[in-house]
Image 1 (cartoon, rainbow, N blue to C red):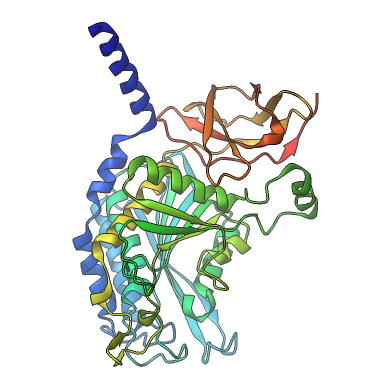
Image 2 (image 1 turned 30 degrees about the horizontal axis):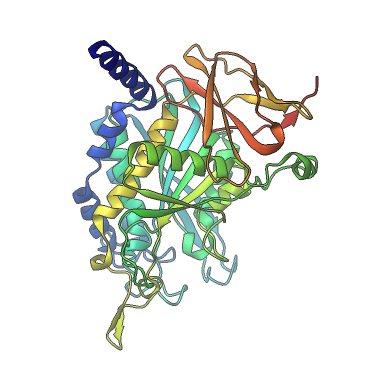
Length: 446
């Protein structure tokens, strides 16, 4: 009996070790709500961070805010032996670009890159927005503290940089403050275009926009649930790919949706107290965030945000009416919740940062057969442990079944009927970290 118990415990230990990485728990513990609180208050203290606001003052306006953000990234870099490449990425947006651009403006993003040791041109990105607004989107002079929208996301990106800069990753990580979000997503457009000109291979963009409110206008108070918005398919797919989905599936299996599923799985593994809520939509109804320009450019991108919003505290002039306090001010932010969602970002960037590239040329076969068959092109990396086949019911939002099949380039799942499931392949590193799942892009017959 003792031998059986010891053996069982040993096997359980092996399984647990293979599925988790102690460093991820250390990253969660290192995220500081106190530092996030300090940074949110600092950002809100610039008075307004409207895209068209003052750029000369040292204490007020978006110019002072972005210089402070850059100085924070610079200080983090100094503490890690200059491990971050910190710079401004700029684009001039001319008056009349849309109704909210009432004068020429230089839209300036603050970028910090932590280069990967093996794949310096592969990037996982966390973004927050620098700018803020009140009721009138063209009012760039009145107070617009933007404490939750979006000092929380910006403070989260800075805090993630503080913590993750202590580690080395095989893939590159980008921490960025994007400007011009409230005026038409101009910062995201600029950085997405910059990434394409530099031939960046973007694994995914994690856009954080409002991650600090737990008291919803619907009366719900919830400090554990958060939403992950993602588009179903890739907007840059060609006509042949779109037509093929009608017969083979893939209507909800684009690269952004796979990134959402990855975040859901990692969060449930390492932060089981959290409740990640995947929302099958680009963004809130009829709206869009700073991940959208990256989706438009063909990159995977999702939005992470609170589950329960309070609209009296968004895009509102600061005032009190009928006993209701309007305005996006610091006292409405829950710093512990913002820290939790920052940790969600950090552990997923770390997991992807340590993961191998995805397999390519993934194909599926097994039509009118009692088995599902797969072929793929292996990753050229000596640290690959092998590959894992995932499958799920066609109505399931998550990958519910998996099988590790070793370091091979093909495999047959006997007894699994291809008609009843959706399938995908992930690469697994010797360190246990996995790439995002790849949905088959082609079929093969005998």
